[in-house]
Image (tube, rainbow, N blue to C red; front, top):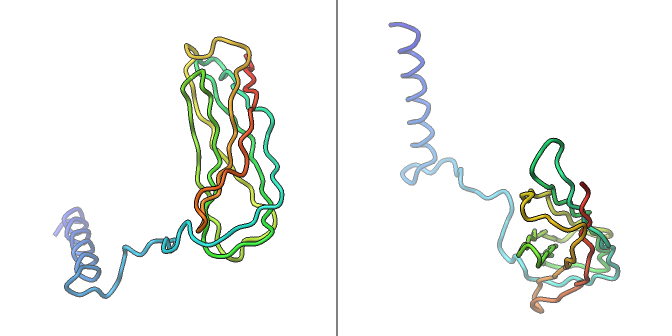
Length: 162
């Protein structure tokens, strides 16, 4: 038997074995277990006693590119107390572009002190960026057993760097 055929049969055997061992008939191994326990997410309570949010955001033209990169500096919140698994959403809105982006951060017991909130950079086409600055809004929203609480919602200057 040649080597290529042995590799094909071996691969098929491994796939079949993993399927049988993890399937409903045998169930010896559970490969579907989530990495994070999502039960109770958004429940519990958090007390935030300080917020440090950016006062400017930048749109920087890419090197030899027709795109602009939106960079939102990290915000920080200081937790005075925490129980359960509340969530915090950090977002930016730029009405001139009809642009809105946010990310949800999951808090869990054991988290204390300062918590950093971040948004990944994003790309905007050069045809949408025509002014030297735009007005936007930064928001930080807490979701816990009490419901939705807006912790921070303030205007921010979106500076264009050409």
